[in-house]
Length: 518
Ligand code: GLC
Image (cartoon, rainbow, N blue to C red; front, side, top):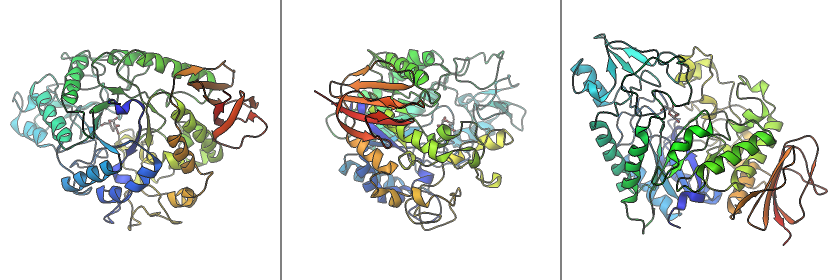
């Protein structure tokens, strides 16, 4: 199949927190290389690396100072190439993260813009004005910062992340070079950060409600994006597909407040994949998820753009804590871990049975909870700082991975002084502790990835408290959300269950995969 990504499982690596090979307390390519066999055994088709480029790390590397190199903390370009080559040996493709909406204020182009002064061509690469408008940063606070000469520049995120001016042709030209730089190195695809950003209404109008949202606005979901991504698709398609990594892909981070906000991207020749984040945003109940899944499938129907499913990534609360507490929980005490784990395991079977591809975020396969009790002084996310602590930010889902042992750094590396602290109670969650336990969440993910169903998706008769669907003639997935056990359809065999199932009925917060009677 040339479009390998259509039903792939892609594993997201957050490089700072995956594996530390050089003992500095921060993850790196050497660490990731050593853990490649783990990823092969998990059975993933590709890995997506969050940014590893030279960066002040003011936003975890999404503040890029050089798009075509590797930050020394993560290794070198040669280390990157070695990872890509070793991954290819195992049949694993590599996707890199492209950050086109903004760069780091340390990027030479922004430094040159500051030095060149108002009205200069250097400033026109960014969005400088003599006075700000009322737009707000996604991370909280105003979206404008004043420079010493009195002008202001736009940053939809942190003040250390100035927005590029995409209406200046030099900016698309620069990014075309960046794309080709990584595609020429053999990457299979690109994850495009804030893909619904980039172009701004040239009038920069004040808006009636400037509070952050993902609806179409003078800064998000601009019509210019459609033609722009058709151009990127043409670049991807210009690479030969007859050798590994095959046809090249891109997956856009398109947030919307409603599914309909994503409709414009589902056109022939659009970006090949647009993330579907609506599972995150849907509460743990059958009717709401039924609606989200139906609408998501309809979105991609008949288009050559696909909408991969996700239940976690580096920007949202981990499913165990979301389902066992709430997205607003602020301390570990507010989370019922047993409940959250039960639901997260059921959600995993749902995720991996849905039609199309799924992205799995490192640690999701271990059922890691969010670490909410990180001390304020240890927090790193600019969201925490910019909102004066009103929003805790995303550090809790970015804690270094626990690989082995009974205390920090849990085999993450040699250095117990990890860049974010790990909680004291993660010994039972390490890879080592879960690997040989057939009932562990890691085993559940491994088996589910190995046995993902194919075939057409159809809902079975709706039950008020359960979801049930088939994939092809012989497979069904059933998830029970309600208090009463649900009768299972006639089946030959239970392929996988997220929890104990006895007597032909499915308990609450449990999912099963069934082989149906012929
Ligand atoms: C995306 C990234 C997020 C980052 C933001 C700004 O949403 O996923 O981590 O903070 O863009 O680059």
